Image (spheres, rainbow, N blue to C red):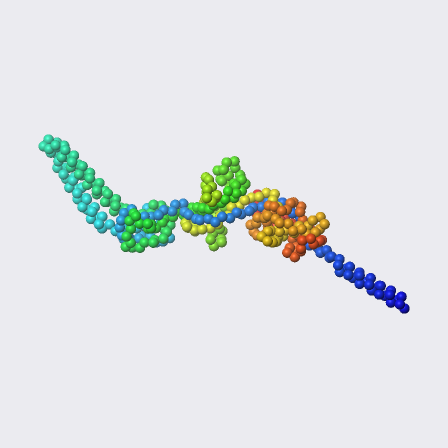
Amino acid sequence: MKNIQFSLLSLLFVFASCEKKEEKAPVVMPYKVIKVTQSNTSLLAEYPATLEGVTDIDIRAKVDGYIEKIYVQEGQEVKKGQLLFKLETQTADQEASAAKAKVTAAQVEVNRLKPLVERDIISDVQLETAKANLASAKSTYQSIVARINYATIKSPVNGIVGTLPLRLGSYVSSQTTQPLTRISDVSTIYAYFSMNEKQQLDITMHAAGKTFQEKIAKMPPVNLILSNGTEYEKKGKIETFSGQANTQTGSFNVRASFANTNKLLRSGGSGTIQIPTNLENVILIPQNATLEMQDKRIVLSVDKDNKVIAKPVTVRAVPGGHFYVVDEGLKVNDIILIEGIGIISEGTKIKPEIVENPVKINPIPYENN
């Protein structure tokens, strides 16, 4: 009887030991993975920009006077030569009348002396003096007339009227700090922005052409994102880089131009310039195959033993928000997880299920694709 009980206890112990061993045995779960490949894509570098017209001309008074009339409104489109302001000229008009009378009197005196000189009744000196007085009177009169003409202020260019800070009756002069208004020619809008030396080299080195000017001429069109987040309907063109970097900031000033036939863009506005850079044979991975950990971007790679390894990577975002260009941290044919990111811990053994790389399925923006 005792032998039977011992056998049963031994059997139970064996079963219990087997159950414990089964519980301790790790379960290898399947997870989807992809094989790292190369592809072509375009990146967009973004730079804050300020917008200015082809010309922004401050309109100032050349003479002293009170504003008598204002012929335009803020934001109005004007043509070259169109009347903008008129200053009060009452005093100048009176001075002009008096000066004109002096011109007439001086002319009469010259006319009177001419025949007397011809008959040798008087000397040439008196006639020359009269002529000098006539020239002086004419000069004074013309100066006053010019002053009156300056009181009528016209637009020097086609453009848009800016703010009108001064009102009727305001006294202005050539020394007035604040301009009467500003006329902006916005048929073309210039977007001014800056970039550092590395950014300038990255952009120009990838552009076609031998000389720097050829590279600028062949650079791809750029986008303008307006302050409300929408993309401007027309593409722009980079026209100039500053000849040298700013010694204090190390940055280059850049100008891009945009056609503005509908006058939607105005001088003084702001936006963001997007410059595309085409990249060939670079490693692309889905953004959802990464996670951020302690200010680092991490991917989960699978080693030859099918164990998970966390790898830090250096990436740049591809427009569209779906993919990253990997600059450092991965090589072609590496296996990375696209499932269980943020759940699986490093060192976990998995059963990798290779699926089609999304880079091959989804179109990546690239000019030469």
